[in-house]
Length: 375
View 1 (cartoon, rainbow, N blue to C red):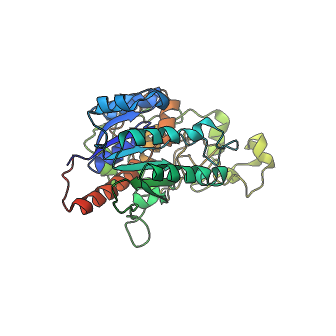
View 2 (view 1 turned 45 degrees about the vertical axis):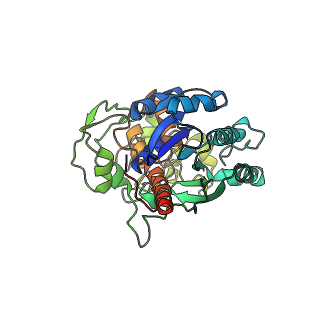
View 3 (view 1 turned 135 degrees about the vertical axis):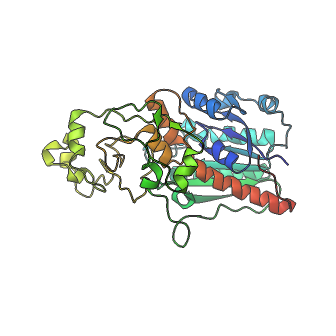
């Protein structure tokens, strides 16, 4: 049996990479973000990338591009754009066009009839419309014959060196039991992957320095570094954003684990001089080697989160952000530096995708009572 997958709203391909690590063959990815599409094509050369609005992607085209017939696909995966659901979007609501894009996902479910579905989204999906989106997803999938369960998964519990919460829907139409992946890291399990274990081997950078194609300057230390390096001899996307002079001055006052509260009052941005000490807990935060990263967003802006390197007076590079998302180093992100940060921040961490894929694979093997050869 060949386990197959199609990834809608695929972005750079974090979920696709995780599914492939679990033994699935990703046949196609769909996304409208051009730079992400170039990354997906470079890192998933065996898959067909379709860079068109999801509304324009027909079932016939998907079947033609993948060689599948209706009912032959193992998993249809994807995370509809999350901005409409995010708690950071104060105008969110079901009236937002992006909040109805999951209906396009459902249209493709109906047309392809995959055995399994996987959907991922932000925690804010629970609050939009009083839970309307979650209820609609489950009700409409039920109408198509799918039993679905959702659960909040914590990325750090699967080896990702980052505190990240995501709602993951898993369902099937074949009557198989449904379960979400059991944590592998945490209390009584493997220890969490620390920031030092994630990025401690990468070459040092000055503020604004573009590392280009960089050689590793240290030997890989620990399982995570060995995993992300693979057989790589060099690493790409390791360049530090250029911070202005005043920001560099601010950074020099912030110790590991510190934040904007450590900046002298006269150096604070005007708006923060009036802030309460209890506000903005992550702003101008400096990481600690032995801790977890805060959630990696679509821009590692030090004004908005703890994105300052533990030792160096600069913001984390795209590669460091990618490591904190558990992307292997062979992933080369395309487009501008801004586009690269967006791709990294929007992605499903590959190790979380791998855990989801392995669980579905286990459920399939339990149902068929036979092991499945990995791709």
